[in-house]
Image (cartoon, rainbow, N blue to C red; front, side):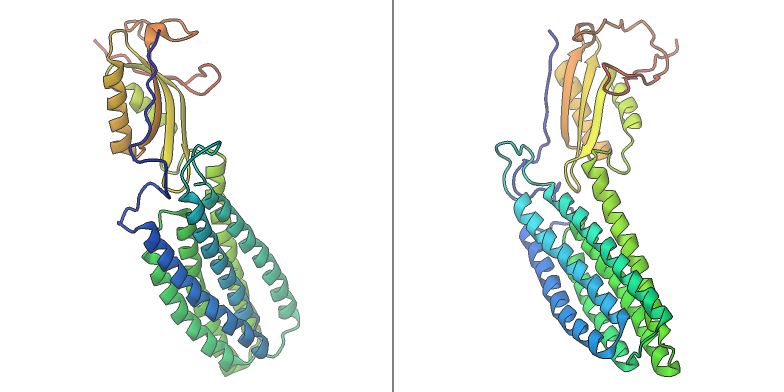
Length: 341
């Protein structure tokens, strides 16, 4: 019989692990920083919305809507942190860590829907520009710059390895640029009376919202579809594992992301007859952790001549260069290249 060794990551599966906070910020500290940013944004949204209606500025209203999606993303991030902190149990063997990814999907979708509405309103106002009170737009936009700087600083203190935290951070950073554009529009309206400048600033905000929304949907979609994490090439990793001492071939290799910052890998590894299965597993675990940062691994190790349902491949057979082919229908096989004599 072959030997199957299963190894899991050194960090436990409980409480809110996102692969660890690389800069030593605790989950409680994350929640405090996010909550502070949420309060700042919430207060400003209320004031800005009121001024937008009084001044007739669509640019201010679009900024308020954009900031509302930022607030929504922070709320979802806080909820996701709470749920992800619950220990794995029952049928949820990974816990609820992927709630963060679902909230990122929801946040990206709301950004795109809000962008569509604002783009429609902007086109209508380009055709029929209303009166805009320039000084109100300028004063509110400058205040928005200050608020966004403060909120951005708060989120920069949190763990940006989380897709939600990073998404909220990028949104508020985009808001900063949007408020600068709105301030410029306010100056133009005050000095020239060109009311369409307000609408042009709105379209600038719409572009930022679409960019951020598509980015969130793309990144969270990759995780939900079990794609390999960005920067990790499964073929290159498989070839490197197959080149390790005593390894004959590697197949059924899968690399995916559990949640932000938590890559996982599983593979079936064939060891040359007489090779030490335990030593091979330990060596591959160390290689994956040091070279690729993958610490959540499941490796099944079997001796080459005892592979279930497969013919033995003698070590001296000289399989030639590793040409990936399907092994049992589960993906490419990576074999050690023979050494020239």
